[in-house]
Length: 407
Ligand code: SPD
Image 1 (cartoon, protein in one colour):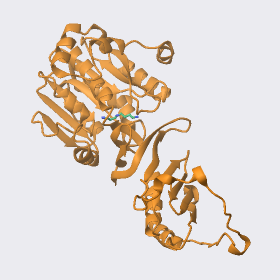
Image 2 (image 1 turned 180 degrees about the vertical axis):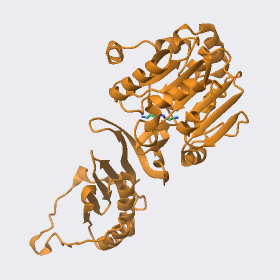
Image 3 (image 1 turned 135 degrees about the horizontal axis):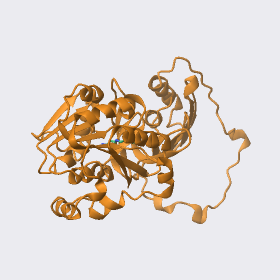
Image 4 (image 1 turned 120 degrees about the horizontal axis):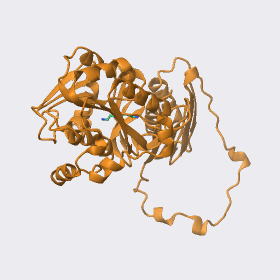
């Protein structure tokens, strides 16, 4: 009762079962829960409002004429919603005995475009929205209404949807992880700044990153000899290989060792000083990624880094989740010898303003002292779409309100 896609699909299907011609559908998910929507059919409309907290839905099936049987819709919805109880009232409206047909000439109000084209069916336009939100704010993306993949794994609900503006997208527990159209903002900034700041990095560990975008970018660096990627949820990899092949493009690269296991335990059990770079490409600090925001985890990351290594982690948003952003920074400052923050723009993450946070160990360079010529050389042969030598340094410039959060 809280799943906008399931409800939209069921309502559209209910209209079709009744023999109706579907013209469009508009469905919205409400905060904190509940779905409302309408399917407009050539023969009138079907409407629904749900109260998930009561497992209840109120449905109105308006039809016109004898060609559409609303009881077929009702039968379909009972099954689709697995209803344990249901009641229905049929009201026949429009008492013919009280009505008189007007001999009114509709003139220019007539839709002449339809005349003589009875066989042309109106196109079905869907208006279905996916929303990533907390209690107070949200980001909504319109999508086709089709769920290409949805599996409840041992850790989370993994979905692939097709958004109209940003293409296919991966969501975990209703949070946008990545989309075809803007994934490069995130994946380039999660990799190249650190790889180019380091001196000839060879051994890289990626925690999370199940869509494959981060390892795809890491493997563009010739000095890298080995990448170990540890993703807790095999379903994420499975879904992305099948539906986001542009992102999951390097899973067969021989330099990659892919392990489906808990990244937190993996780091805990790893020997000291083996990696030049650790990248934490996790989800938000709820559900399976919560442990990726703990001091114990970052202490282990510090330990497994070589003497002059760098840790890079998705750093949350100073706007959307200032608390998590600040706590992570406080943690990195306490565990690492130096810390830094870069900002980047990701249109499909709530508020658009996101961060990458750095933990720098020993005498590893800080991102601000990276060699500009080295970046230019890399860009010249790798055609990045977001990252360049100016963005490298500009991303380190923080607005005053962000400095205040971090102070
Ligand atoms: N709010 C979304 C934060 C998710 C960061 N990880 C995304 C995974 C992309 N590889």
